[in-house]
Length: 385
Image (cartoon, rainbow, N blue to C red; front, side):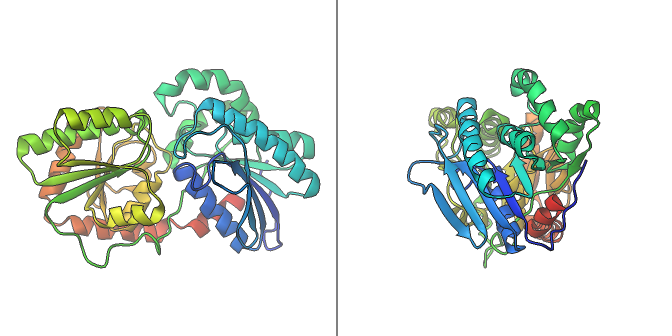
């Protein structure tokens, strides 16, 4: 049952996510932006996230919103493993119970089914607090082949959380379609609310970057799901065989970083493949603005923030034809889509972009699409409504 509240009256919201900037990637940033919007609507917002060395345990990030950080054994800013997530769930539950005794929350919002949904389910059972689960892609059974065993083991818990949730919300149509396969047996309908993007912050550069060398960029976690090793291999083949003046900048950190470094060194490719560490939004915007095309070759996606950000900065996009990417990119108009099972298609798309008469036109069209359709205010309102 979906509970509709009168949001013209200030409400108390408890938000759960083990990632919140500077921790994590797109989901952490989405949490931050939604909390900001909910606070601007006049709601009192409490967010429980993970603590990391050097961060304050409690901070008022803007009027009406407070972030509480709990221990989670987390060792890296960008990524977290299963043990660290479970540690977060245990500590977050303790903090949530303490806060629930002091505050009468009208709604709990859990980013990811696991681990945040575990805490939300406990609050529903103990304090009858309605909750909504926001699916981000990797937490959806069937979305990533590498997680098949984990999905099977955790399925009873996932089903319990979705069954008791007041709403299950995916961030793309593709993600919702995959989730619905599990939700059908629970008589649950998975709704869709897309991510947003700050188009005032992520904007085109005042002057267009020079045409040569042509600059591709990838930004994200360096893990198998992102398929970045395939990108590096196909780009190196393209430059080596076609003698093209182009550069690929890879911005990120993760378990595949060492393999990328070895690949670049073995092929003496440092002059055309540049590996940079993950950075804060201001520097990431600068990297976007100095580039011509973003490449997102992921095996799976929820709703890719980096694609939205790059389009807002006026970049054309090459992306795999998977859920999430297909929700944003209009093939042939704002970018190009390729079959993720065909690496040669990725190389052909890069070559096509390089020889296109006007990649800037794709970028302008892409920005118009995200300005019109992807807005954090609308996203935050729809999650509550």
